[in-house]
Amino acid sequence: MKIIMLDIDGVCNDVCTTTKHVCEGQVYDGVDKEKIDLLKKIIDATGAKIILSSTWRKYKDSREYLFKEMGEQLASCVIGQTPDFGFRLRADEIESWLNDHPEVTKFIVLDDQDSEDLERFGSSFIQTKMSTGLTEEDAVKCIEKLS
Image 1 (cartoon, rainbow, N blue to C red):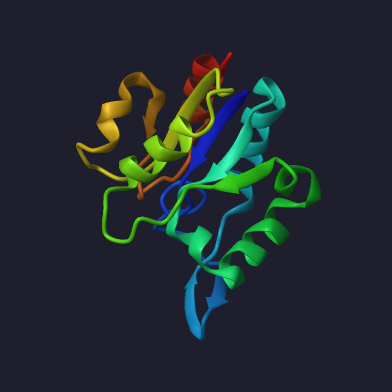
Image 2: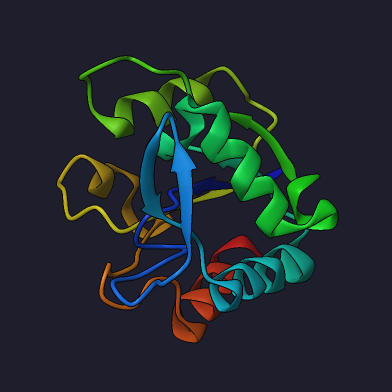
């Protein structure tokens, strides 16, 4: 099984995102259709499934908004989320999920975090930028890594 560990902010949106969503009474940046389309392109090319590693996974309002924006076909590719270890590193949560799923043959971590902890995944870490979010170039890297 191929897996995309998916962050949302800085991947499915960027600093120019104008769409918004409400989560627990607060207004947050939404997602951009062009970024969702690039994510769909990766899924279509590789058959990968999505595991949410974003903090969005913790909030029902955010997940529901995301799934609506993804559309039924792409949302059906989301098969789970990483555990929440509180203030521990995101990489620890990802590593724990991967350790519990030996059926994973290939994976990528798609995230904008600039942190050494995610670098433990080596070339499986595809780092986006908050300034641009997921780009065509990033999508090509993801497809190559998962193919």
